[in-house]
Length: 429
Ligand code: SAJ
Image (cartoon, rainbow, N blue to C red):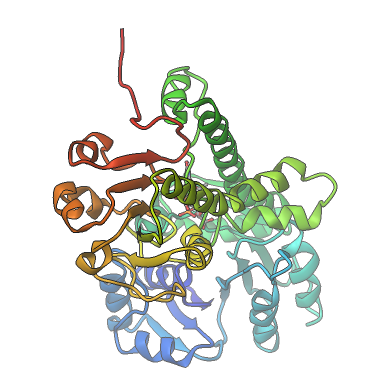
């Protein structure tokens, strides 16, 4: 059993702290936000994540987890603070630096410091290690230091924290081994040991791989729109090849990971990270592409003074997270051109536009524009929606609603990445 101090009680820190606490360790979770500290100590939580409420409550109830505003003397320090982008698209490391600085006065021989936050390659070695060396403790001998990137998907965090494979990059091989011993107590997936810079880059490349592939899919979508065919059908057919796995086009890439992490490489390697940079630009320009297409569809339909209804503003379906959501940009651009109405059953606000209820949102509308693919939308009856609308147009940027049902209800159906009106032929010989 160890004493562990987890710095940052967000989407990764709170589940991590709670899991270590329910696995027998004594954990202090530290957050700079007093409200979060109070909430957790009261047995409540401040984020939405399946299973977390029960787990955190059990951890606090057992006496093994308490939240605090200041770090406490411990055997292990795990840094789980954000590494956001600055407006100039460079990584803001100040939370990591602040967290590290806060533990310097209490570090002692034998301690282990782990960075979980996704960070540019070189951060553990070139930023954290020099700060820790200032204490006079010898890193790799007196104290251990490692990077152990989190790799979990929001909505499945608790399951994935336990089951996913983990990469542990030590400042020395021994630091990696000491860290692995700790994680072995709760991780059931395999644990791979390496050096800290390799671990940092592996984590960033996972998300960069996805970003580049989504950019490829979006580019394919543009080609197909010009050709008057459906990228969805092209993808479906190409993916029948055993070694091809094309991703899906969409309204753009959101979330606090995939749309952020590749920039860390562009910042560090401005001359060499070429495909990575272009992919970011392609995906970032997708909201404008959506707006241009929406305006074209409305113009082609002869709609004057259009009223457009956005369905779904989170960065992907079935979550309430709007960070970096392409919907935010779409809202900003469309708001200047049309009478805009916004509906999302999961999001209460914070999108730069007032939210409407379902009925209000479609009344007198000329277009339903699907941006986030919430499962709830599949249960909507096209006839009922259409009855309230002025012009029955559906523009689906996720190719997610059944176009046939909407066409049968009299809708003009358009899909992103498709120059066809009807999409997805399932014809097979
Ligand atoms: N998207 C597309 N086309 C696709 C797939 C996704 O347009 O084919 C869009 C989504 O709609 C969304 C964005 O990309 O806007 C990202 O969504 P996502 O579900 O792919 O990923 P995240 O950001 O929710 O979580 C990712 C995960 N990384 C990978 O799948 C490689 C997760 O495992 C990481 O832990 C997480 O980032 C993180 O913390 O880095």
